[in-house]
Image (cartoon, rainbow, N blue to C red; front, side, top):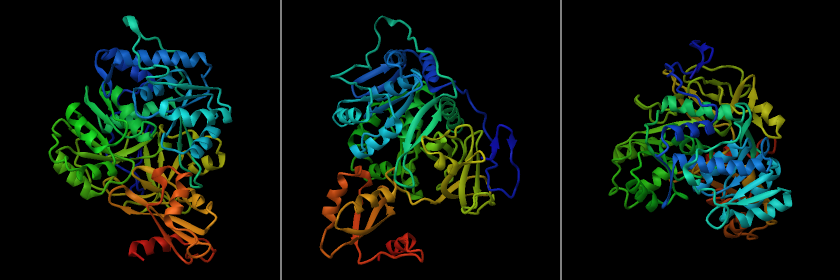
Length: 530
């Protein structure tokens, strides 16, 4: 959308949305203040459901206040606290408590390997690491090696942070952080394969919650399913931060499992269903899908990866609820655009920009020339939700943030009605089931095997996961290594979702005139099945 606080850009030559901008609803000082407001307005409403465990909003805030006080006593204010937690009540309480204690949360994905985790923790320099039983074995030796002063294990057999305070006394939160204090350090992949830490402030996160709410207003008392990792920006925006804004209930599943999802939709009367293309495709193929009663669901969201129009239509026809597709990135808080509720969706489009946000299409080479409607180029974004920068990466920050704009690296176009369409990626990034996979990282894992002489990785379409990782390998000698041995080698170095789905051996890889691997040629060969 081409609107911002100062007015509307009406230059007809620019590829920018001209859709009338909805009013921005209430913006809280922080998401912690948002949770406190929900506890004041709806103290007895069910806030969190985690299997048989349930917390009301007054209990939720009490747990957050109690754990925040523990953290503050450890001197975390102004520092970073990392959380390595599976989906649970503990993950929700810990996230808000870290923010309430004035620290910057570093949410870590439990699926990463020890090597990946070590690199992130070394960059983040957290003073405290909060883990559950599943992550403790992996985390404790790393924390000792990296000099992290305190590891706090939470859960049934360790420190309980989900126990509601006794006596009904009102929760007392620590001193509120300032809106421009850092709130999140969220790691996302880099073009070099190394994870980059995105610095986001309390203001940027809180504003983005309201921006999303303007296009997709929640209904008071919504029951929202959360099955994607709560360490992921999408799950945080469309689950963790969505529920308190509408005084709704967040129903947590440890992970996606088809049987459990279908049973939970029915048992918990789910009304809001955030998903991804992988999840939608898997459920449509599930033998119990057609027999499931979906009448409680009134809204579905799709994010993390592009959703095929055919899948969207099949889902909408079967469930009877619209699927609103959007676009975002960790660096943008994360929500940039969405198909707005109450208007006919455009299948394949990621909608219009959220309020106070400009989206432009510029030439992909220099990034300075603004293109017209229907022209393809790099997407750049400007708004109050944009990151402050990458931690410890001044050069990459300067490349991404130029003249107030965030350059996305994605290729898209804006149509004559102002709707955004994602067409390609400037980067080589592959999105597997909503997770970013960077080919360089996979290639480096392959190159670490002594039998590999050359390797190249690309993404190829996959009906189930959106995209899959395809690796081309040149062995040092014929028969020196097979695909299974290489996969076993990679499993020690890469998270499961980063593993190649297929490895093809070649005598040589195509090269450009500069003697670089010609990935465009490999993509053409893969498309033809060569």
